[in-house]
Length: 552
Image (tube, rainbow, N blue to C red; front, side, top):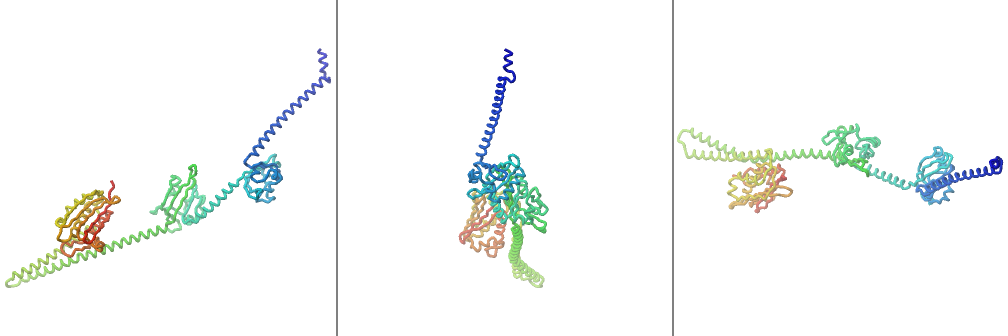
């Protein structure tokens, strides 16, 4: 068996040849299987890639080195309006809107030399309209291989950018033509915009300041008192630090070329934030108020001059009134004194004469001297009253405290002349006036003056009625009314009733000095209040003292 078996498989035998054939055939079958598997995987991968490219929203090209389109996807067909078959018959230059074929070929050569790149192009659709694409290029098989291009439609982005540029240009024209200065800072406090008005006021050009800060040696900011404002108090710095805007802040700008003067501005500062709350910009706007400040200063000086002139005029009126009021009683005093002096000398001469004395004649001379001295004394007393009232008129305000009007009124009742009680019925009414910050003594002086004046306005032959009322006025005011049923006043009299030395009573005893109502009016004004009068002839008068009430 072994020999037969050996013989059957001996080299060169038929069985050996058959076995070798089968081995070779099996080997061939195995090699084809692996190849088929690899080919299948490659086809699947190619199909997957082609599916991605052909369903992508971005356009896709495969271009040969000569610029012919070898493949395109549906997305680019939709962008351009051409069919795939139409595009595969075209070259890249056929699609470019703003380039000559020579320029396009030169650009392709630059891409080949650079090994790819990214750029933007304007292309023309089949209907002739233009669209913009962002193109990214790479190469398959090296620089001499096919170009693979991915194209994204950026037409809307370009429109938005153009609209933004147009809007920015319009905004800039608007800002530059504003009559107010505008400075826009970035979040890093560098200047992004400085309009023409701001540049003019600061004495710079926009090129000198954009990208830089505002601090520098050319100018400094000053406050309203003229003091220099340190850099950490610049508005932009404060807004960046606090996030709080500023409105209507007055600042001065002092430049070296202003020769010691300042330009004054009314400033506002506002932060601008992004959607996530981050600080994007700080916008400073300001209006040049230099002329207004100069006008205010001129007005202030004019007012000071007017006040001085008014005081001088008032002083002149007062001095004239004093001279007039004192001159009459003083003349009477001097005249009486002269007559008395003559009588005394006459008596002395008669006493020195020899012979009998005429006692009756001496008595008449003495009576004349006494009458002259009485007239002189009356005049001197009137001068003394005028001087006393003048000291009250010019006296500085005493200290003030919280005062209840009704208490001040009742305290003043003790100082009324006896004639008031004999000529009038006096009624005091308390309706709950708020407290006032005042001098109780001066309020009492006003009450005495008003009541005494009202009593003297009563017609003879009857008892008059005077009512003093304390009540609340509007806006927290306190009212003190003194009302009488006397003779009243004409409109002409009311216009002058508070003038110094003005009186409607005839010369003689009880005439007064004409300063009572004027002093009362000055006291009311010094307390931040008013003293007014309402009156009609034959219907009496009401004087109202109005003072600010004290809250609480």
